[in-house]
Length: 208
Image 1: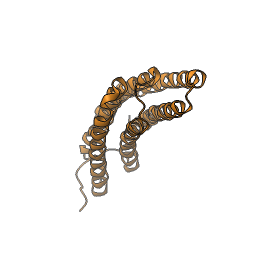
Image 2: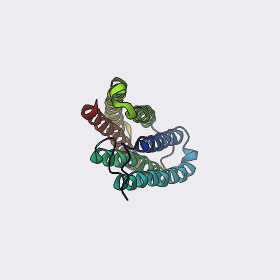
Image 3: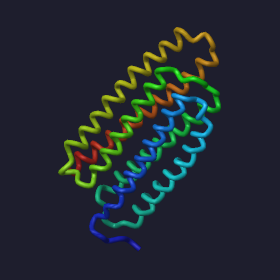
Image 4: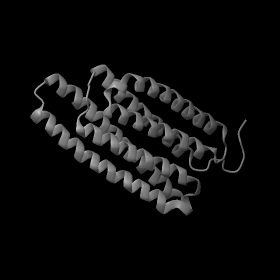
C-alpha cells in the first residue's frame, strides 16, 4: 500500500542517522590511528555500526518503495542513502586492513587524513540536518558543502606529501605496501565525502 501523505519528512531523519554512523566510523578510525592497541576492538565495533547503517539504508529504500510523494526526487533519495552507507563501508574496510596488516603505530599523515575525515563527516551531518528546509537553509548547506571540498583538497595535499615520504624514506617494501594501501583508502574516503557533498549541492540547486 502506497503512502499518500504529503511529502513525508522521515527520510531526513533517516539520512541524519546514517550520517551519524559515518561520523562514528571516522571517530573509531581516529582512535586506532592514535592507539593501535584498540584496533581489534574497534573493528568489532565498526562491524556492528556497518550492520546498523545497512539496516537504516534498507529502511530508507523500503520506505521509498512505499511512499508515493517524496520530499525530494526519488533518485536523489536513493543515491544519497547509498552514498552514506558506502562511506561506512569504506571506513570499515580501512580498519580491517589495519588489523590484517598489523600496521602498528600510524604514520602522521594517516592521522592527519583521519582528522580531516572527522571534520568532513561533521559537516555532512550538519548539511543533512538542514535539508528539511532547503530554501531557508540554502546558504548554510552550501557552506558545509564548500567546507567539505576544502577539507578534501587539504587531504589531497597530505596524501601526496605522505606518499612521497613513503617512497623516499621507507626502506621496508612490506611496510611501504601496507601504508600505501591504507593512505589510498583514506584518500578514497575523503574523495567520497566530497562526492556526497556534491550530491547535496545538486539537491539544493533543484529545490532552493
